Length: 530
Image 1 (cartoon, rainbow, N blue to C red):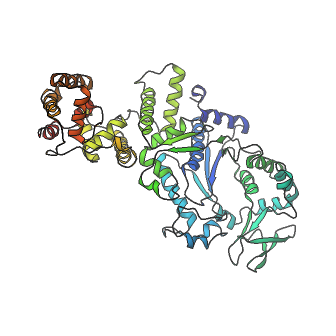
Image 2 (cartoon, rainbow, N blue to C red):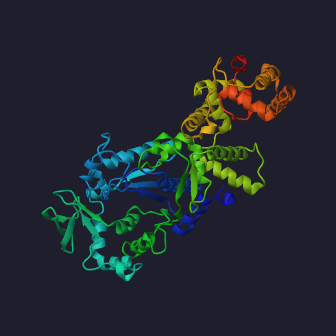
Image 3 (spheres, rainbow, N blue to C red):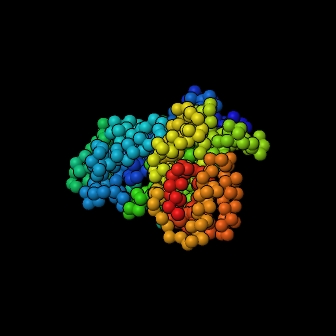
């Protein structure tokens, strides 16, 4: 499949094998500092690695997928969307793992954000091995790597200065490490000396002074531009992407590449840059709060896991794209459904190359394998209308669809339930006002002219009373136009009268499909008042 599809994940997998050689185990890495909400832009890196991991495994390779929580980084500032701002400010300059959880749910601020992500990722089929850097540093796992950095202090200084102008070059004495004070826990410390072996002496602004052994100390940490390449060698990383800011000319990836090779004698991993993600429309009520960041949980309220994966699998990582919460949501679901039909050969692709491409995107979009039986497709727009007609009752909608389609298997029903939940949330929380409606109850009457009422009566008699007899929307629409002509009304006027009678608006869903989606007796009850 890799050779035929031309998919970027397959091409990257082939590049990894080509550049790193045929290995028993390939290590693919990702990671982030849990300093705040892990937003959807961060998720792009995670899923980009996951897609490459899948591509390698599809080639029969053993892969270790590691995700590093850099929870021993410094807590530098309090994000605006965090509760307990004043309390959190007391912990500035602490390691993030020692900041308390302002929600009181987890043992630390870092763990709260880690747990949020670790809970959501399996929903989209991503299950990496998590590494916790606070735990690793405190266990002195990197003592050798830290000592090596100290031994190559001048080399590191030269590498870091290579891409800097004179104004920003390192001045004076410089150390590749920092220390969290054992007395106050802050990194407000300065290195006094290194004995050339394992002992580091430091002093802190709080007045504490200490000499520590790197093999036992819990507080010594490498600066991130050295820490990153040190861990590439420690974990034997073969692939790790990075954002466009890190991949800029002379950026952190360039320096890390040199550090990795010149200091740690390890070739930097294969990489690519991924671009930014924009957000279009509102993610619902939660997005209105100050400082709200869109995360995977927000996305999964509107898009099913497979469609979330599709957004990323179908877009090259170095391409900026927008995740929509407005009417574009309908188009995205339509595009996914078309890819699904092509994958199952229920819709013809333009040629074999297009089929191979669409099939591969579809495979990578699934949280597991591709189902033997194609999922039951209901267009998202239609599903939103059905849910609004049912007053948000998903069980009622599914019961109606099963009656129409026959029994669905367990997987088909599971996917339909998921899509229904997304449609309900989007229609109620994100859709523009003109898309939303509430079906009136019998007895709720609109203010209409005599001519409009006469038209509604004809619509009731000529269309609604015999609606079960129409084979499709087209034949039903023809009958609606005939009723308008017989009533002496412009079709537009009859449409308006029907929408006013049914939902109290001048416009609504396509009328023929709308009428056929509503229970006949319910329709007759609403229109019977005219």
